[in-house]
Amino acid sequence: HYAEAKLLLEPSLKAAEAYYGKNHLETAKILNLLGNVYLLEGHLATAESILLQALSIFQQQNHPESYICLENLAKLKYETFAQSEKQN
Image (cartoon, rainbow, N blue to C red; front, top):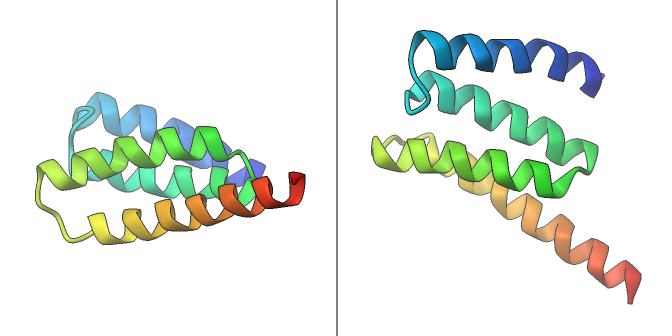
């Protein structure tokens, strides 16, 4: 179902960026969701890039949802560590 989620979120992101701008909270919320989907899919580099974008916007606005984004980034770091441990 991750592919379906991305099919919904990616056009939503483009619409939010066009309507609100790239640094708006609504755009950050969609970025956070999309980054989480990539995280759950195991595309960690893509997820990290997207989540860091979202976090930057949230922090610029001093928005409390930055904590949710930080939680997703913590999960990502854990997954990155777990994958590196499997390879060793």
